[in-house]
Image (cartoon, rainbow, N blue to C red; front, side):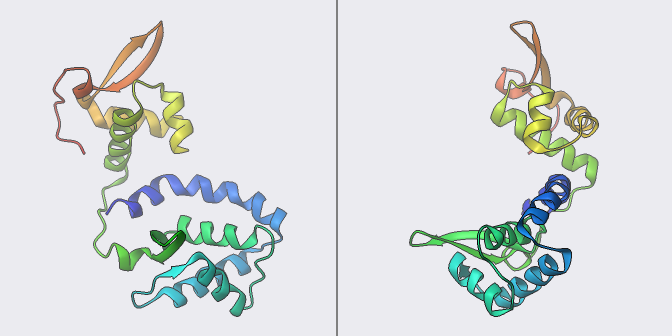
Length: 181
């Protein structure tokens, strides 16, 4: 239920950073957009395809997948929120349409989403620095500060060997003031 808002929040910078990679692979916007369409059509109606089947669908749709192109296109469709990785079939990765897999996604507003990701990050990685949080999420430092502020008393600033870190309050023996999660 969280994939949609997480992609909207953190996927933007990943997609922007992929422009250079696409140039290196010889992929233009028309080709990547067409690839997303092909995968969407191949998976529609509850379909679930293996990686090999997805790559075959791209090839059948006229998209060259040599080298790392096919893998990049599969990644791109997932980053765009069109496909999602589903459980393996045997040892092979499978893909589904995200909107069919998660038909009723959670849709917090931006500030709430920043607070949620901040709490989840520091609960699983804390104590950690704000810089670590920014690096892991790809968010700007401003968004990181907002997320920490929105999480409020659920997060606590602590000193770790003279370095200011952030941790989940409930993991320090303090009860959080909000019911985040």
